[in-house]
Amino acid sequence: MEEEDFAGGVVKKFMYVNRKAPYGTIYALEVLEMVLISAAFDQDVHLAFLDDGVYQIKKGHNPSGLGMKNFSPTYRALEGYDIEKLYVEKESLEERGLTEADLVVPVEVLSRADMAALMAEMDVVLSA
Image (cartoon, rainbow, N blue to C red):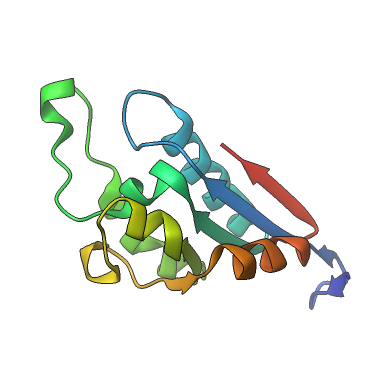
């Protein structure tokens, strides 16, 4: 379903699905950059964390031993870009021994079935 924004353009529902650990590949950082670009174009941005992607928003990152910068604080800045629809799959948290309190940002925790239903409502789903 398309919605008209105030300028008469079409607003699409985008969901970015993060499935990869935060370091060791470029996926997590690249998805974060795509999220910010989409928000700059006034799209309806949703961000989901599944599988090892939940580690992207876990508190206490210290990737200095890998020679990489800790980009997890950037997730706290998303609210300033009107990106407030962050979701975490309940089963992914539980399988990794994590809770909502272990995360750097407020999220909505959804069951696997509810996450699938939410994804079905999106116009575009991009997974990394």
